[in-house]
Amino acid sequence: MGFLRETVVFAAVVAIIYIPWMLLVYAALRACGVPVRLLPCKGRGFPQEVTLRKLGERKFVLIEGVFLWGLPCFVTLTVFDYVTHKYFGAPHHSLSPASLIAGLLIWSALGYCFGLKTWSKSSRWDFELDS
Image 1 (cartoon, rainbow, N blue to C red):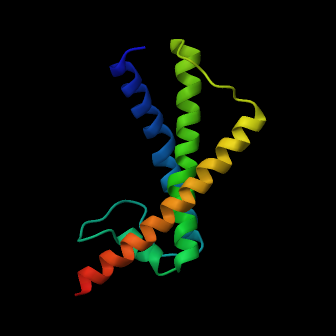
Image 2: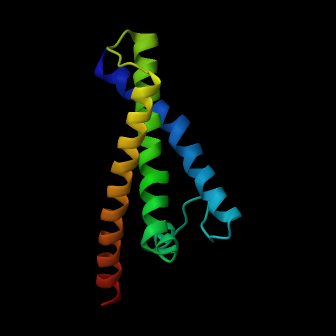
């Protein structure tokens, strides 16, 4: 399968999965009383991240790392792998329940690590911005 075709399919899968997922997570946060905006807004910095930081480290890591990075990566890559195999004959990994659960756990753990890194990076960023 050509690089251009793979890139187009991947971009389509990301647009179809990640954007609605992000809007769904932000809508759920708004329903729970967290004042996040559903669409990006103008201004300096990352207002969503600043709003989520006010929830504390544990909730920030869970939302930003696991729900907004780890799970969408898992679903996007799983769907991309399935689509490229089914429609383009690319090599395919098994979609057995055990491999899906293992992938979900791995991507959730990676998302947690990503959230921790983002938390520490954003706290340095806020400190430097206030100085």
